[in-house]
Amino acid sequence: MGLALLEREVVEVETQVDELAIDFAAGRPEAMRAAYERHSSLVYTLALRALGNSHDAEDVTQQVFVSAWRSRATFDPDRSALPAWLVGITRKKIADSYASRTRSRRDLDAVTTIVEDEPVESVDARVVDSVMVAAALEKLGSPQKEIMHMAFFKDLTHATIAEQLGLPLGTVKSHITRSLKRLRDSLEVRDVALG
Image: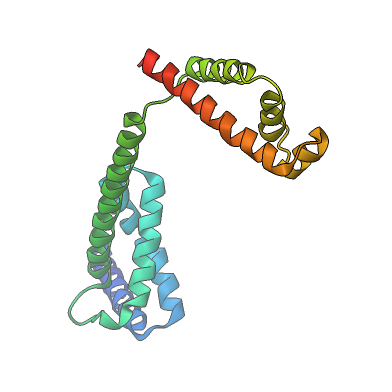
């Protein structure tokens, strides 16, 4: 008697599964919910075993059911059982996840290589440069030193500098041009000496 009851339950489950597959293929929303409730643990378990990460397994599970629902018109309940069809989609989504991981690792490796290849100027080198620029500015003399200080440290316009110092605008511009050339030349000499 117990065996007959078990066989009847198996037939009922198979009938429910077949009805679910037909309803799913027909696009009935309640079939989607039922398919998720019945088969999401299977999909999740396969993804978790393959990917080894619960977050990735959850993502794959969601992707599988979204993909299955969108492509339900291609599902034929007479040719394949719904769980088997979902397993096929799961395998594809797992492969996609591996490919994405590989691309991410490759991109990260490329960025890391680029960053490691770029020399990082030390704080000491920047301090030395600041001291050298300050020393070069001190050598300029008046009014070039004042003009350069106003232009680059106070960020004043050429016209404002000319007005504050009582100099013609052309004279201020000439002083800035000549002073920049002298600074560049003195810093180039320093770089050659250190290089």
